[in-house]
Amino acid sequence: MAADPQLKERISELIQEHPVLLFMKGVPEAPQCGFSMRVVGVLDALNVDYGAIDVLPALQPLREVTSELSDWQTFPQLYVKGELVGGCDIVEEMFESGELAQLLGVEQPQGAEPPEASRILPGGPQQSPPMQLG
Amino acid sequence: MADLVEIRELIQAALPGADVEVIDEGGGDHLRAVVKAPQFEGLSRIDQHRLVKAAVRERFEDGSIHALSVKTSVPG
Image (cartoon, rainbow over all chains, first blue to last red; front, side, top):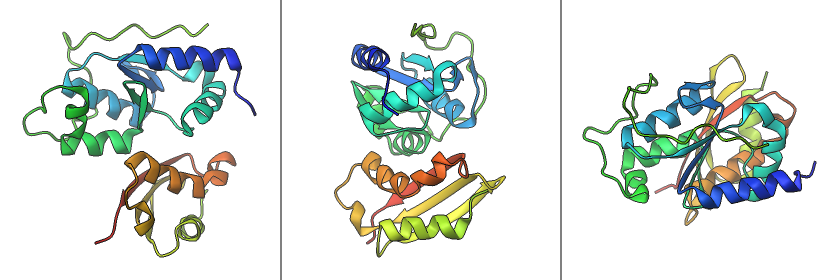
């Protein structure tokens, strides 16, 4: 099924506008899937600002959009500087190797292992509020 | 419920000569595929993952796989 053109255009704009953009299930404060939670954990460990889009309210339409934009249909999806980096597996691998910190232009945290899939600490990095796609 | 053997065969068919391992991480629909393939040489991680996911796309679409973790590497 073809992606909705307006949605596709809006998503494309968002990807270009935000240096770091995460499509996830749920929101950073309350991820609704283990993989999304893990990516949020990695981004928090790196202390980077990022935008987050909750795909759950429009899951199938968003799958169609990302399928056409990036040939990728599963979430979470992390975009950096307008390019799809990958899902949880790739994000965690790149975090462990230091590549992700390098890509984001931040310091690799000491003793870097994928953080516990636990809660964001208060006073953590600022995130944009969940985006309205409407 | 996905058939682990079938999933392995689908990936194997898409990547002849690859070393493929498919593990059930729980519930029969959360799977992990560990794939070592010469075809991955020179490809970005995301492109390597795309190849694996393309091989099993039908099983995602029909709901037999709910989640697939993928780990890729190049032999040698």
